[in-house]
Image (cartoon, rainbow, N blue to C red; front, side, top):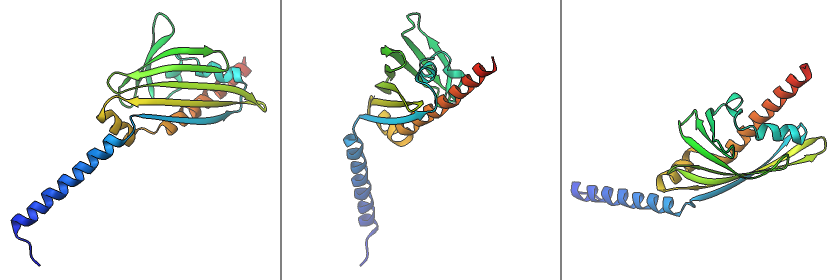
Length: 177
C-alpha cells in the first residue's frame, strides 16, 4: 500500500486539525473554578498561628514568594507583588474573627478572582488550620496556565511550611527576651 505525497499531506493536516480540536474541547471543558482544602497541624497555640497569618504587612519577611506588600489606608485591603511572576495580587478582608477565622477576597486583574478561608482551632496542645482556596480563572489562557503551572494544594502547603518556620522564629525571639 502506498500513499501519494498529496494524500499523505492531507492525512497529516486532518490529524493535526483533529488533535487541535480535541485540545480546544478539553480546555473548554475544564472548569474555570477550582477549590482546594488543606488541613495543617501547627505545634503552637492558636494565638501564635493567628498572629503570623494575620500579619499581612510582615509577610515579605518570611514568605519566599512575596517581594512587596502594600497596605491600603483602610487597613482592610492590600496588594502582594509575587517574586516568581511579577504578578500583583489583590486581597480584601471579608471576615476576621481573631484567632479563629479569616476570609479574604483575592484576585489579579484579568487572571483570576477568588476567596481564601482560613480557620483555626486548638487541638491537643497545638492548632489545626483548615485552609480553603477557591479561584476562578478569568479566560481561557489563565485557565490553561493555572492548570499547567499552579498547584493550589502545593501553594497552601508551602505557605503553611513557611508560617511554621516564622512561628518558631518568633517563639525563639520571645524566649530570648
